[in-house]
Every structure is written in structure tokens, then in C-alpha cells.
Length: 379
Image (tube, rainbow, N blue to C red; front, side, top):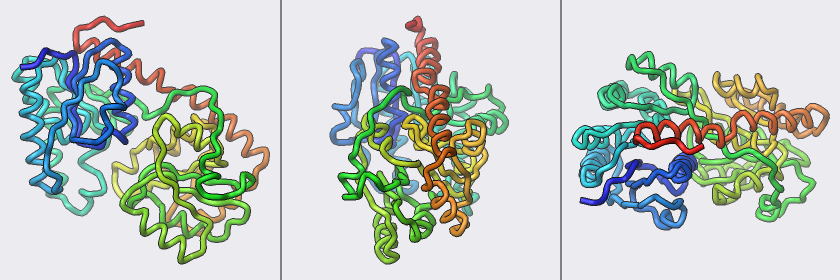
């Protein structure tokens, strides 16, 4: 049995690419809490971790489907039970029951980060049995959790009402705000002239994120181009579509999280076009929205409730339905005409980023976790 840590932090996702998880781990380290991280094997992850975080890799054969999640539960339950901690933190739904069991056995605290509205993700659409399964999977542990965190007000309200729990703590997926020197990486990677107005789409390329509509709408752009900066299963299809249409669309591999703000700051605008295909999308506040604000970029976004509220309240850009390719094309052309409105959006984006600064959001997380661990919060 290993020495007890303050927090046992577990998740099945790719921690190496999960900016939220990495920020939370850094917040725990800065709060002086010792942390054991249980994660699937992920190459160079160890070098990305802050002081005070011990990595324990939990090997689970990749297969997908019910068998994979059964194996995840068993492997993480065994690993967590062998490592005592004051707080067991489930950083996604798939390890929640395993950590609930370990915390109960250790008579320790349980916390949970509902980073998605898991019962209503795209994969459960049209599959009521899958939705019912994950709801039952989540219900018991979330009700006995000592703290629940999530990413938007709408998801917090939904979880509170659905499970009759205290309203979860909303912790935005926002970077640290502050001045940044633009990096010309996007121009060097694409060979485009620095005079080109760049629309940058940050993050994963997959179904339901408006990528195909964006490529089609970009066909008529002059003096402007779209750059997809990221990765994902949809990249190949989008590249083929852009090539077939002759659209001014380019694809650049992801950069480390610490470089994102500087790299995108050289663009003209940021794009987030989540489609209203599931309740999880409707209530989302994606990382990229806050990255754009912190880089001082005007935002072109789909009119989903949580996203619309921020874009409208802070006057940082325009809203357009990604299903309306004609309207999307018009919005791209209009935004690429740099004028007084564009300059105001830039100023407002930087001002808004001070509200959504990770320095504020991290204190919410680390203070709550310190309290659960029975440790005084650092000033």
C-alpha cells in the first residue's frame, strides 16, 4: 500500500491533450496538495505534470463499447483502492463509480467533474437505452459526492434538478488572461501571406462541430482563409472536401497548450460552430471560446444558449446558424472586412477574458479541494 496522497485524480480521457485536467492538476500542485494521477498510458504525459503529481498508468486494452467501460471500471477500481487518499476525484463519468467505491472503502471524500452532460452527448442521441444506462450509472455516486464541478450554468442547473443535489460549482475552461505576443506559426505552416485574414478553428475535428459547413461557406472568401488548428477523426474528410471545392482552407497540427494563445492571436477571428445536435452541445461552453477571448479574437459562433449569452453580453462577435451555409458565408465575408466594429470586438474580447481568467477559476477548484482534503487553502 502506497503512502496516502491528498487527492487521487482519475480520468480515462487523453490527459496529455485535456487542457482542463492539466490546469486542474497544476492548481492542486500550486495549492500544495499531493496528487496521485490515475490515467491510461499516454506517452509523454509524465513530462507535462507539475511537481507533487505522481502518475500511475492504468493499462486497459482499447476496444470501445460496453466491454471497454467494464474493463475501465475494474482496472480503475483496483488501482484506486490500492492508493489511499483524502479525496478521490473522478475527472469524468467513466471512472466515477470506481472512485466512489474506493472513497467509500477508505472513508474518504468524493468529488466529480461533470465535464459534459454525459447522458446527452451525441453518442446517446436516438439510443434511449444508452441514455438510461449512463443516467443510472451517474445517479448514485453524484448524489453522494461531496463536491461536483461542471463547465456551464445550464449543465449545473440540469444536474441539480435531475439528481436533487446541491448546484455544482461552475468552473470555466478558460486560460490565464494577460498580454500575449502573437506568433506567426499559422502563416509559416500554411505559407499564407501575413496580410491574409485568418479564421481559426481550434480543437477537435469531428461530427457535430460545423466543420463541413465552414469549409463549404469559405469557398468564396477573398483575401481571407480558414485554418483548422487541431486534430480529430474528421480531419481527413474535411481536407478532401476543401481540396475538391478549391476552398481557401488549411489544416495545421495542434500545438502545445501553452502556445495556443500566442499562435491564434495572429489570426483575425476565432470560429466555434457546435451544432444543436444534442443537449450536451446546446449547453456547452467549449474551451476554444475562452481561448479566442484570451487571445483578443472576435468570435463567430453558433447561437447556442450558453455561447450566445457570452458573445452577446460581452459584444465579442457574431452569431450564425452553421446549418445555414449562405448565412455562414455572409458572416465570414462580413467579419473579414476589418472595420471599427472588428476593433471593438477585439477590445471587448480582451476585457471579457479578464472575467473568465483561469487564475480566478482555479481558486474555486483548489480551495474546494483543499477543504475536502482537510488542508488550509493557500492565499
